Image (tube, rainbow, N blue to C red):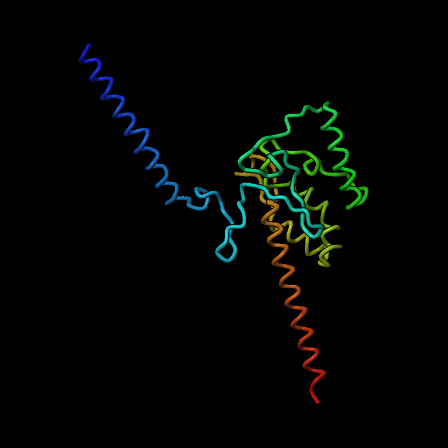
Length: 208
């Protein structure tokens, strides 16, 4: 009996040290060495400030931005309250919300068919991606609001479209945060170029 008790205690201590301490530390060290960006949540920084993650969506409401999917996580994209709506396809509340969302999108984008991911929430409520079709659907509105051409915006969408993982897993997708950051950068470059041309024109006029 005593021998069995000692064996059980030693086994418990050994497995705790091995599986509860050594193994997690080894995996953490390996992840930090091999893929530090992914291991730390694929955070996006600008000027030393963390502005988001490629893994967690954000709510964009400005008319000059691309919109992501609706979110049922808390008040929207709440990482501490991840969840879907848990409403079935025949639920009246879900049907009403989808109809209202579709009506609002048609009001902003015209009568083109609304991509389903722009009116339905994901299972986690944190999905950072939309389909390429959902991004392309928004191009006319964003072009109208920002002054960029639809061709320029189509290039941004294409540049931020990620293919299927390993060529066969999942579907092509567009990360909304990355796309909107690319949009802001393009706007800044366009405005800087316009200001430079305007300054050059004024300088030419001032010469005798």
